[in-house]
Amino acid sequence: MAVRQHKMNAKHIPTQGEPPLIIVTGMSGAGRSQALSDLEDFGYFAIDNLPPQFLVQIADLAQLPESDFSQVAAACDVRGGELFNQLLDILESGQLPVDHKLLFLDANDDTLINRFKESRRPHPLQTAKVSLADAIDIEREVLEPIRSSADVIIDTSNLRASELRARIQRDFLPGTVDNSLHILVSSFGFKYGIPTDADIVFDVRFLPNPYYDKDLRPLSGLDKPVADFVLNRKETKDFLKRWHPLLTEVIPRYVAEGKLNLGVALGCTGGRHRSVALAEETERFLKKAGYQVSIVHRDRERDQLDR
Image (cartoon, rainbow, N blue to C red; front, top):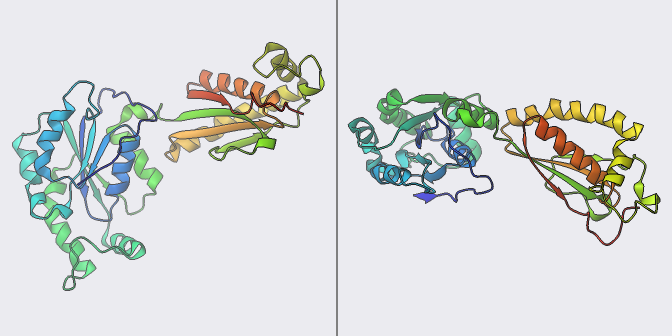
């Protein structure tokens, strides 16, 4: 049994319709690990290869107030051997004290065979005397009663990882579909290096530089005189007329690809004047558009000023 570390970068607040317990099962190679990782990203405490006998105890923990176990995703599969055979009995007996959903991942035989060949990992039922194809047939027969009891069946034969994530959001976590993305807007100075974690990087050194005004030089883009100098220029206004629609166009596409954290970085020479003012303006625009946004000015306090 493997317990994955709960990701605490953004606390997910459960909304109505999100089950406190999601049981993930299905064919080996059909994407159970990916589904469990997706649920972990959405705030679930993820447990891999859980013997079904422990589901009742896990469900009890999920009822505790302020518990890290308030939302649990547990993968149960044929790796559990004889213990796995009790899963259906537990689900049908009504022993679980919380609302729960059963997710079954499936794929066609050709896809499963290709995935095992590509990963070079053996099927859990494969032996020296049992071929990969036979192991898949045996597993499919064993899992058929559980498949018939599943709340959601997802065939991943032709799904990309981002499409599987989107299906899980739609079917289990409707409250995350519109607000799952967090955007970090940052300013930086090119002479100190480009942020390595940024997804979108834009160079604003084409704009006139406040550094050459001796009264503005000691200030930063957070100060109104510098912000006015940068934002009120025709060059900046023309840029923003194109920058805002560009963000409006591309950000939903990142969401569609399953992106949870997006870095938008704007850079000038030293990261003190132009990039700071433009990052602040970008944050205002994105917040007004309804996104979760935070901002950081990486190089604003560097000793060497923008030039």
